[in-house]
Image (cartoon, rainbow, N blue to C red; front, side):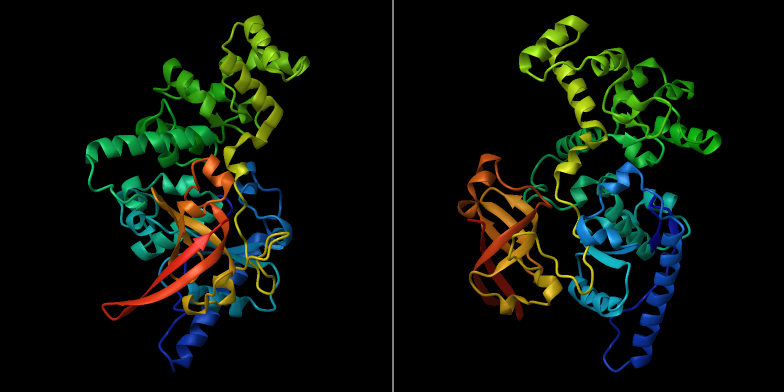
Length: 419
């Protein structure tokens, strides 16, 4: 699936990159189909080389990856390694092309859901899943909120607890994430808007209808013109909805309209950043200390206040350029074509945390089998913040790699450390 920077589906095509051995015609057909889609993508990219929206700039990798005009999103599931190797071969000697490995958890569940059928009615189930994987490269949160959290598969005991209570807690966690990040009012889908405090499905669809009929929102006050969007809903939701490039610059920040007068006064005389100053200002303006601290923080950080900016950027890989970190000797095993049987003790690898349990974390190191990073092998800084989180990018050292047979299949037990 070929999508734009706003997630709009531009075209789709079915490609079979791994036909049976000896079928030369099928190989040629796959290469031709990829070439046609890449040519279309490069033309589209050339027509949209303007500055990206703030919500998209966050996902762009640093360094040479800025030269990529087209990035292919590869799911980390079945045949991920083989597809990466095939793409690297096809991308050889071509400029402006890159690719990234994304977590495809829940993509198949979404593709068969009523929501996917409503969003992409003209596509079959497989192509809906491809669109979901592509959009995760742009904004993972906007795509993951469309999936029941229980289908993502994070957690060992989710089937052993009260399912109603679990659903309530997971929905609350999703809403907390969305509200912490904020939502672009002019681009967010109804599925994402539903997770904003004070909004429901009906109001989310009303916002979308208003955008389609009257264009993008210029300021937050326009929300009150929507039928059914009353003062209470506005009070709850306004601070979490962002408008970039509107008539009111403060609409782009996590500051509620009720606090605009305070924010504008602080812009004129910011004062010092000490805790005593914050408390004094809170008393002066008649607001809570936490509210004053949030307002000052938003004004200082500006558009960079998105907490996702604290994460490492997405790894955009380019053929011919090794994925390495500055000052690091860790290598990308999947990019190098290293298999589990080739792992040796003391080998430094790049990895992504896939699951966190009481005794440690399971890390995908790109060999088709996750390794165990036991809690005793956490570095001091990880122990201080209660361990790693899912999807953290880490550098690990191989302690051991043992193969065993289970029902005729090779299973690997890989030990890792970060100490």
